Image 1 (cartoon, rainbow over the protein chains, first blue to last red):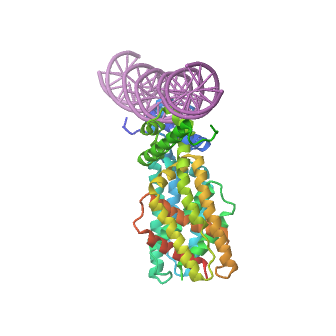
Image 2 (cartoon, protein in one colour):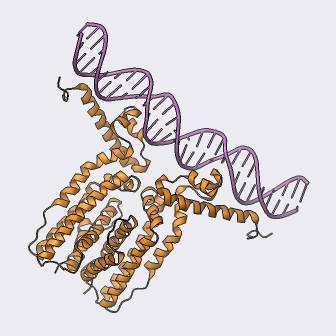
Image 3 (cartoon, helix red, strand yellow):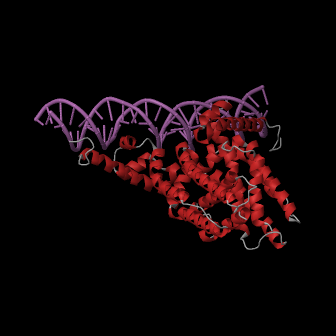
Length: 204
Length: 204
DNA sequence: AAAGAATATGACACAGTGTCAATAATATAA
DNA sequence: TTATATTATTGACACTGTGTCATATTCTTT
């Protein structure tokens, strides 16, 4: 038979095992948090042998990195949304919408993001992942600001990248607050307030 | 002799041991980072027995919490600075100054803050400590905004606490960037840009 | 100097990690 | 079908780190 046959029973079993492990890892991470979660808990839940975990993944970190790929995709989608307003009013709407979507994500993916936040402090690998997301957003926002500046919509006396960074940081920290359940205000209201300051501060 | 005698040799020795442990812990944390640092490394550097560490501290977390007290103090000082401007211009100066001081702290205490950042993800105790600092700042900024709103210096159509939080978040994240050496711009320039947006966005 | 109190110590039990030689399951060739 | 090769799984093992506790040491008091 051909080498990459999907019919290959061995290969199929391997894929299933991997899947079982991933699902178990997800549950254990969410229940225990990244730091307290152990390989033993994961393999027991997946009903496989200890060594098997290390056949499919390099360690605890690797489990999480793979699990996050999914969530990462969603972030990238938001970051990549087109942004070419022709008026301040339009810019306002777009910014408000993007902020809203970004913060909604915190609610949707709360559990996994909780785990992710913990892991950022511990694992350089995970930390790098998050940095990628952040830089993607910041780069995107920087470009948007530069565009608005060129078109006479925004102030030109500020450094676009520095402002973009600052603006994203506000968004990011609110994201973590929501993830931690440390906020008392609806996402909608948060978005409205922070976007309002940003827009009046930057746009003409 | 009286019970709290400073002359008591035992008590003196105990204090010295504790001090040796703290200094050793500081060095080990800075060299290895919080996660990689071990009690064994600390007691070897301090030249005391293993169990001694547990006589004076409850564990790795406790070492760091005590070491941070010092740094925390400095943050509180900045947060507590009086802020009662009579004009927008004056507000501008004050905000700019406070931002600058806050970010300078990142440079001054970079090493310990690096350790602290790691530990925040791992230890609830340390995390709580940082949350205290954050809330102190936010409360203070909220009051400042409310004051400015009452005196007709700032917009009244925004929620003071939500804005304060957002503004502090920008500052905080820049602090961490500086701590991680991930910034290319001088502190002064960062402060100028972010404060500029904030002021134009909020003040009249 | 002997009893008593405070401090320091390291061996021990326990928990988790990552590796690897052995075993089981499946595929291919004879 | 049987023998052989390939791939996947497994858990015992060596290691590293933690926190505890009975014992030893050092100092104080009587």
